[in-house]
Image 1 (tube, rainbow, N blue to C red):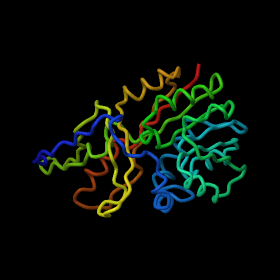
Image 2: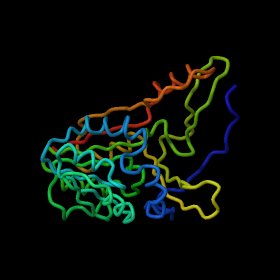
Image 3: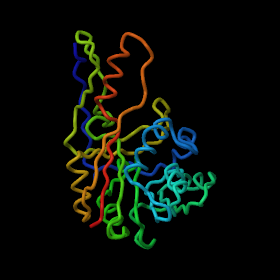
Image 4: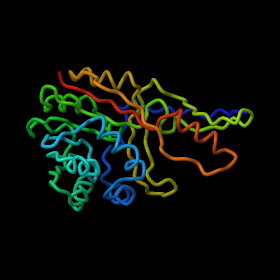
Length: 266
């Protein structure tokens, strides 16, 4: 039997919300989770997939937007790129500087839209941060401005069809032994508050901005970019043997975790 209906979450439009989008207050907690190399999913899925799709070349100038503590910046630097990392949270930038890499990465604490004074770049990336950017249209326009003709930009996001905070969840159909994905909202653009430490009275709150695939791509097109590639990435994990292992493993292969969009400047 399917689960009983849930009370729908009805977020106000983004312009009416007052929650901050910076991860400054969560920087210490986030660094303990991600650290120097990133989470298991970063290491096994996100970084390899992003490097393959963006295809950075030695000597290229690459701009990493929303870089956090620099996990992808360091992967780019190890590929021989000249990397600049941008993040709005100064504490995350400070932590990024504590993780050495050669060639060194230039880190700047500033908004991702404030980049037009940094010169031209061969490529740009925004890895799992687009959903934290309320002004994605402004960021996209600024990134398009600093990209060289023929330059490319990679977005990696939590899959907007299947991983929507408070709007998607797993369910199990016991009769058919199938694990399914439930989605209660997809087409609406949502501004969703995320309590970083549930159960903690004074927990800080960040905001996740859900956008459909159409809305995401329209934003890139409006910035004058063209879509050069699209990929969906699944979990690499396998369940331990058990009564639901087969259904869980099948579901992992059917419902991707991440969506990657590769943009190109004409």
